[in-house]
Amino acid sequence: MEATTVAKTGTEGKTWGGGEEKPLKASYGKLMMWFFITSDALTFSGFLAAYGFSRFKFINEWPIADEVFNHFPFLHGVDAPMYYVALMTFILIFSSVTMVLAVDAGHQMKKNKVVTYMALTILGGIVFLGSQAWEWSNFISGEYGAVETRSGKILQFADAEGNRVSLEEFATATPGERAEHENKNGVWYEAEASYNPLGIEDVKRGFAANPDLRVRTMQLTEEGEKELLNREESLLKLNESGIGVIQGANLSRNEYGAPLFGGFFFFITGFHGFHVLSGVLILIIIFFNVLLGTYEKRGSYEMVEKVGLYWHFVDLVWVFVFTFFYLV
Image (cartoon, rainbow, N blue to C red; front, side, top):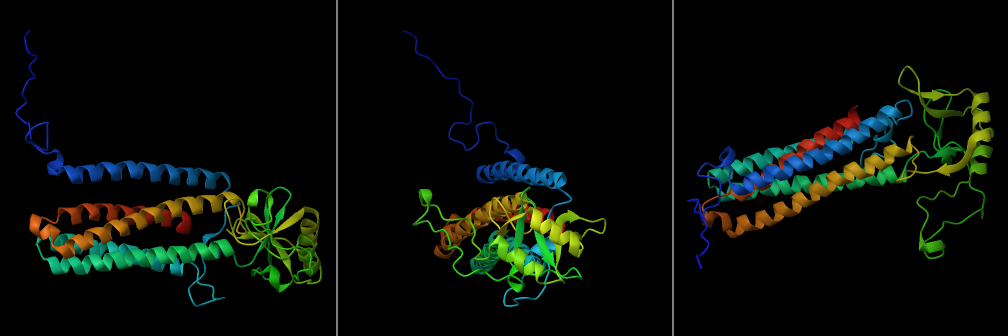
């Protein structure tokens, strides 16, 4: 019986089986990282496109970013629109600069400089994650509160000049009206998504007792500001349409405006935050390998360059997320 023979290609035992030339003159590891970055870029593109379409559909009801992201640590009550988000962005972009310096030091086989710049990159990533967690906390807890209408819209409150007023400034909770619904005593052991001791009747009563208050709707005016109703329209709108109190934001409703905004914010910024967290963990692993001299012994710091590609991608994606959610 004649044995089956396999044709030889001349590339047996080599990294590449397609010839002597490396695609794009890149190693296998770097090429695979580029493949991953390309696929992940398409994923983020799909998310941001969905956000764009949804915003366009509800363009006259979308929250104003300067009013939503106006907090700054240790400056409670100070209106600082976008300042902290801008600081977060600067920190992340600066960490990309230190990553470039780490890669360059690796090319020059300067271990100590690689250690220094990678440590700074890791620190920048950790500070960004902490900042994002703080931003989430403020977004979830809310600041002013609002009233939900029968149609699922949001009513906010302001004084005669249009300055926002929180529910606690004019409404007082009725003693013993209700308690927070906790997971230990609820159906299916699920706690309520958000809780405010104020009831809708408390808000209506407090609003009626303060003649300087007005209702702000979700609709944008031609000047790009939320519609401010006069006193009579405000009373009518609140009494006829108001059905519940909302404090802060979750996946289904939020005090800032269209409920879809909260869902997209949590999902997209959370997905990006997961990428940053993954990047920080990988950087820490590579960092300890650098300390142990692993790449010094190999005679190449290519692994630092590969994780650098991922880190630059994460930074670039944040530029788009920042633009879509905070600037546009």
